[in-house]
Image (cartoon, rainbow, N blue to C red):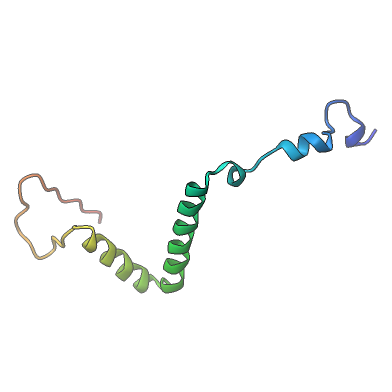
Length: 86
């Protein structure tokens, strides 16, 4: 008895067509968001060819987001925190 002949294991063509992927379930706006994120990720991969390039891109991104370099600073302002992994 083959796998297709087993009771309950074979699906009809109609059942297979009714299965939707996540992409099929997205709205047009959600698809545009996914495409934008994918485009940004491809751009990142294109410019991040080495560890040094990745470090520079990440540093630029966090600086742009408002984070500051605390290496030269001896004082942390109220509400700030310092995390060191070494």
